[in-house]
Image (tube, rainbow, N blue to C red):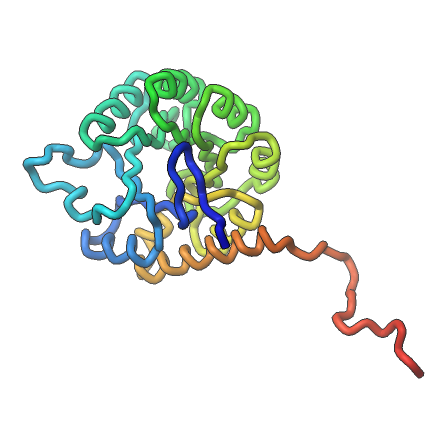
Length: 255
């Protein structure tokens, strides 16, 4: 199947993006990235050493991956804009996962500040992937200002609660034309499959894999779940029925 994920000018076979934080070791991280089948790997710009003369997390990420720097731990539009510019300079990429956090306890996004930062970065030529809540109105606004995708949360970051409001996600999918990539809240493979069965174009996750008892096995499970969910969505599920409907109908049988 020629079914690829297109974000701006980029195109990917895998619909699963994976983070690089919280792993017990760099070796486990490398193995998990491999098992995930991901082509895009996200790194928190404010939490890695960008000095090319010193050892860094980046040294343990294979060059074949497309780096998606993110503005995690930014609490104002100004911080996020400055961090995005630093990422472009240091990592030589216009891709940015834009996060502007509004509350340090829940890590919910500050959508007002997010919109401000996104407008600036889009005008500066960035390919902006904004992390937002599951608000269809905000998703539409982000699309209208030129964001290359929208990344609604399924549940709070690192919670593992799964898709809390599938109906809002469905409305977002019906409302906008750019890719919808579920970000935050996925806890296990069934959550990933559900998101893809809804019609989401991709997934980004970190904690669900890194905090698993066996991160490498969970990465493989997420890889398969993303593929299965996407294929099920394209296949089109049977309608739900309240009563039984025999697989071998009794009507038309000869007495």
